[in-house]
Amino acid sequence: MVAEGVDSVPAARVPPRLPRQIWVLCGGSFMIAIGYGIVAPTLPVFVRSFDVGITAAALVISVFALSRLLFAPVSGRIVSRFGELPAYLAGLGVVAVTTGLCAFATAYWQLLALRLVGGIGSTMFTVSALSLLIRLSPATMRGRATSLWATGFLLGNIVGPLVGGGLVAISLRAPFLVYSVVLVLVVGLTGLLLRHRSGNDPAGSPSLPPAQFRDALSHPAYRAALVASFANGWTVFGVRVALVPLLVVEALQQPESWSGVALAVFAAGNAATLVVTGRLTDRIGRRTPILVGLAVASLATGLLGFVTSPSLFLLVSLIAGMGSGMVNPPMNAAVADVIGSGRRSGTVLAGFQMSSDTGAIIGPLLAGALAESFGFPAAFSLTAVIGLIAFASWVRAPETLVRTSHAGEDAVAECAPGERG
Image 1 (cartoon, helix red, strand yellow):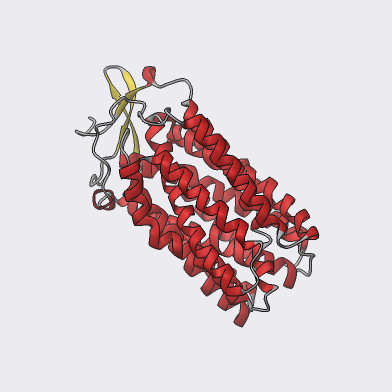
Image 2 (cartoon, rainbow, N blue to C red):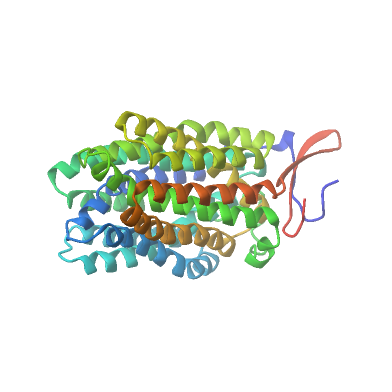
């Protein structure tokens, strides 16, 4: 039986195609990621040019995440009050301005201040984009929708670091200007294509009450997703961005432009598994792909700190990226299952994002301090332990996508908040 209040979607009624708005969001994520990927390999090296240490360089990464963390609850309320699209466009505008100004920074404190303000815009467009994506995605296609969105971001991260590595040869400041221009283009294009097309959910029920964070927190799968999101923020958005470029230059003795290649290989591993995992998630459920992905990503990430061969480093980066790519689509889909169809979910997604940002704040600082005091192997070993803790949390979590039989047809049941599985 399907519990009261739980969505039930007969297979015969599943839309054959994803809504057009989702494809627009995916295209936007691709362009944003190109710009982000251009800046990622440059930022730690650019910060070090101000004669600061590894920990200080990592702080520039962490302060961006700290800003996202502190502003996330406000972003959730902004989305609920003004809607996803206005919050999305405003957030992108803030990041465009602050990133462009980074190119003209003349002191370390100026970079810190600009990254702090940029984090406010980042959390606005991230929460609003994911809220809109979940609200418009049919229940039986959430894995595919979230994997497509993540694929756009990751493909951009493949192209971006390669372009950024080339721009570094021209100037350490050029990537920031290019990223700013890319974001301005995204604001114009998505604003035009999504205007008047993002107000209704696929079920036609805009009057549903917004999902509440306290209700989602009562679900064990959401709690496990918070732990895994923390580990993801620590590893992917923290340590990978802050320490991999430094490891490449200082431990592997490779040129600065080569760090872009290393980040691009990790992103390629993600892209190789995202689409397949998204479809698999909608067929067999969310929990199994998450467990496999966390195990692979954690072990491979821990190994990175011990590798001394550049070619082997790229291979292990590829495997770590593939493991990470197996985690994101099912984890986002599981959170969407907890939220339910057709509901605005700003506060629930803000909490989910805050968990990731907390990891992105703490990860670079602790791992950076370990790298400075004990070497890169200690930093990446700690990162692997954090991932394995997330694995343990999902071992105890229930499956959120339960297939049942109703009136002779297969149906999809979503676990409601508070349901223990």
